Image 1 (tube, helix red, strand yellow):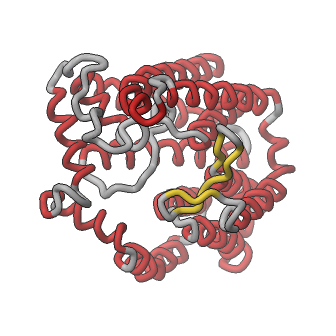
Image 2 (cartoon, one colour):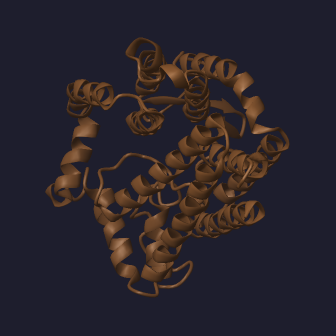
Length: 364
C-alpha cells in the first residue's frame, strides 16, 4: 500500500507536469515570439523551474520529514524576513503596482510561496506540540492565529489577496480538524468579514473583478474581458477541442493564457474531454493525498500532509473555478500545469514532502 500510494501520487504529478509543458508552449509561443522574438522563451524558463523544483523535491525526500519540525520556527522567521524585504523599494521587484518578487537575473522568487509552506509546517508542529492545550484560547488558538495574521498582513501589503485568503483558509481548516473550538474560528471569520469587504471594495481593481464576476458583459472590454474570453475559449473547444496548437484565444485575446487561464486553453484545444481529464487527475491526486493523511502515524505528519493537500486542492479548485467563470478572479495558478515560477517549484516540493511522509509513515 505504501509503495502504491507513492507511485500513484508521483505518476499523477508527472502527467500533470507533462501536460503543463505542452500547454505552456502551445499557449505562449506566439506571444513570446511577438514580445521577445523567441517562441521558446517561456518554455525554456519553465524547464529551468522544473529542474530547480525537481532537485529541491529530491532533497526533501532524502530527509525524514519528522526532522522538519526542528526547522519550523527558523523557516517561519526566514519567510517573515523575506516578506518584509520584498516590500522595500529597490529590493523587491514591482510589477503592475504589486511588489511580490525578488529578481535574480533570469529568475524571480515570490516569498509568499515560501510563507505558505512555512506557516503550514509551523502550524503542524504547533498542533503536535500543543495537542493537550489545543482547545484553549490563549495557549491553543491565539499563538498560531497571531502568526497567521502577521504573515497574511505582510502578503496583503504586496498586495496579494488571493494568496492571503488561501493561506488563511488552509490554516483554519487545519486548526478546526485539530480540535480548536468552533466558536473561536467562527468568531474570527465573522470579525474578518468587514475587513475583507473593505479590502475588496476599497480597491478599484478588486471591486471591478467582483462586478465583472457578477456580470462580465457590463464591461466586456475592461474588467469583464478576461472572464468573457476564458468562457469563449472553453465554449469553442466543444467535446474534442479545436486541436492542439490551434487555439484562437491565445492570439492576444485571452490575457495570461499560459499562467492563470491555461485551463481555458486546454478546454479550447483539447475540448471538454481534455478538461475532464485534468480534473480527473487532480481528483486522483487528492484521493492519494487523503490516503497518506489517513494512514500517517504521527500528528505532525498528519497535519503537514493535510495542509499541503489542502493548499494544492484549494489552488486547483480556485483556478478552474475562475477559468469557468463560477468564481471571481484571484490570480492563483493551476498547480503543476501553469507557468508559475516559484509557485510551481513549491508545488513540486509539496509533492516531495507528501511522498516522504508516505514512505516514512507506518501503515497498518
